[in-house]
Image 1 (cartoon, protein in one colour):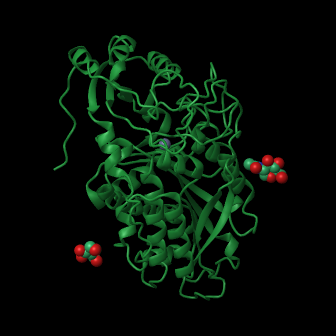
Image 2: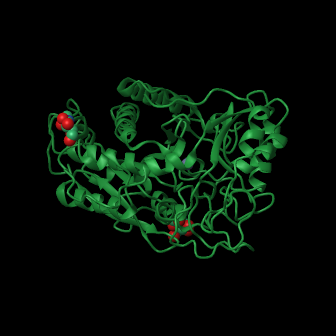
Length: 477
Ligand SMILES: *[C@@H]1O[C@H](CO)[C@@H](O)[C@H](O)[C@H]1NC(C)=O
Ligand SMILES: *[C@@H]1O[C@H](CO)[C@@H](O)[C@H](O)[C@H]1NC(C)=O
Ligand SMILES: [Zn+2]
């Protein structure tokens, strides 16, 4: 059994003993709260989180307006908000700042400690770089690749090996990151234009001749660097498609008659590398944004160009800094270009894309647009909800884990500039979702490696369900 969340304690009870713990700052340890001064010579050292905790604020009874105000106060203090739902807010805190939280808390909110020792969880999820294993079994989903987290180079090696091994896989460069790394997309598609499938469709003969007419489903992950489960699960899904594509009896083979799947596991490669090599809690990209204090990075999932709003008081040191203008970050701009205008080889992207799923963690949610506002309901809301409920059910049936379905704005308190808002609102991709993967907060971003596989299995079931749902709603008829 895993240790569960600690019992509820009010802040008042805990504040004094905890804040008494000394919090020694070594040179490479970044004090959390106040804007960091120039961080020199921390380039190669790993940040430590000794004495830091995660607290869960219960704000169910707080008015929405007060929730937003509370959040912006936390952000102005450079506190790191991990997750928000309609009833809770999770917050990372150095022990020396517990008193501070107490004074900030809205009157009807309470808080309890959620993760007692953050550094311990950070240590438990670190990839074992002492013995990197490159001899992964590619022929089975039981491959050891899916039992650990990996550095970016290993993710890319695995992707490359899949492309070499499987006939129906190829890779394309979606674009370049701020630090000029390639953002890779892996496509699974079958050219069925020569397979005269006369037994198909029951005598309509309406089958399109051109493979470009296939419907494309795009899976993106890794906007937020520290959410390591996303890229892991995306590559598992890709692997399961690859294996399925070789089995003539599989559901995947059936789906590939009508669909192309494109998986982009690490849309934010620079941030991912930073979260491995320097700061495990890093969320943004690594862009220079002209802040006075030399803070870097844009929150990619606040930088997409639909109802994007400049922040009230721009603070590049905040983990939620949305940029100085929409699409200032090259990574979402590259993805938006792919979805709007297609790939440079003209074989995918653009009009073909009819579904987009953006993977995040954590919270176990499957959400449709919009995130920026609850008063704007997408015209397709009913169908989107129906499919989302089916996805959640497929996931639950696989593993027993419960995922909630609904509209993003009411399930989370996200900023405008979200990817799904842009993809649905501007590029008109109907089946657009954002998923928050496991867990519900016990480990948060530090989900233990042995939970990668079960999380990946349930998401794979969910996405296959979604593809079948799209097939029934749009293609079969
Ligand atoms: C998966 O691998 C593990 C360890 O390598 C092994 O014990 C197990 O039997 C394998 N399961 C399947 C279904 O192949
Ligand atoms: C798509 O191409 C058009 C024409 O070149 C361009 O104006 C537009 O900005 C592109 N869209 C994106 C999202 O890059
Ligand atoms: Zn995220």
